[in-house]
Image (cartoon, rainbow, N blue to C red; front, side):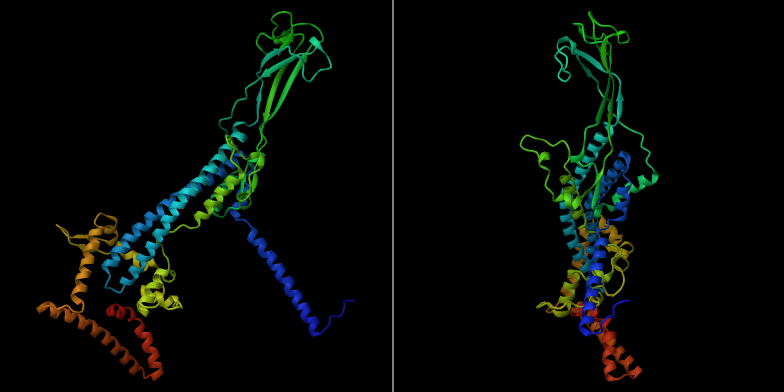
Length: 505
């Protein structure tokens, strides 16, 4: 029978705590397994390495990915610069419009990104080439040890008779022991028809997509590399126990006991010859854990001292180079591309603009404003993306810039990409400066200029008053209470807050 469970509160509390502890331990275990799991592309790629062909495809994919990282690093500042030039011109052109603040914020954000991108390029151009060189060196080493020196059979030897005393077979003495040196030159394999299974080749190439988070590299570890195995077959014929002459055959195919110059191998009665040598290369590739190897010490027998040079790339150097490249790659900066306005409103640049616009130039608030408020004031909308709301129009609008001849009439983006960017910025800067000078306090325009300035100022004030009157009429018509009226007025007036701030500025 099952034991009776106690209803005592203390016992119940103990069992509850035990269950919580066990459940916590279980989830910690599960989470640790999930965290330790490699990228599926990495797992598939490493499992596909079954011979030198798939290993070479694997390493080629890593090289290609590293080259792409390097290309992206060099292209980022250029892309950001092009976008910054267009946005800078737009900010100057629309300085007094409702979008002026938004373009100014985009200028500030892009300037920060350009600075970070330049720092990234400096790091990437140092770290990524080192990783590229390391993996290229390891690939060459693998192809040499496992490919160029692959299994081969050699049957052509050059023999040299040696009448010196035997070193191993010493049971006999004097002329009864014979030595013969046979030399052969194995040929290198310069290429090979590789036909791995299509699925294995595809999976091996997948390591490129997994490289940024790669944890284990499939490779021939330098401390496990070996020379090819060599097997030699030799033959002996006749009785070598007597006779004083030990000579090389006339075509160096054998060594024999002969009174004169020796006979051809088919006629040799008392002789020995090496007839075949086979070199054998066993394919070997193991997983190298990058984090572990990158921080490990090179084995003592593989370390170099003054005057020594290492002929093979150390596992530790390879792992460290790849890990450093991975760490650099995660810091890449990009130009704007469909980023949401709320995301950009979270940036320090947008928040700084918001704080100074809403609280003045003395002390910034200690608590950050809600991101929707920042987006609404800076970009005019709480929702939307930067491309649709700000960038798209820069390729479709038309600017008109005065020149020595016909006015320059092109889009903001086209002018920004050409040689007249600074001319256009100067044009709008002076245009805005003239407006500011005409409207500044203390100026005394004469005649028509004075009337025009007063008319513009009065028009702005009238617009604000008119909007307030419309709000009041709407509230009266709806017959709402005083409390609700205040709330409604706040909501309606929020739409014009940006324009009022611009007017007060």
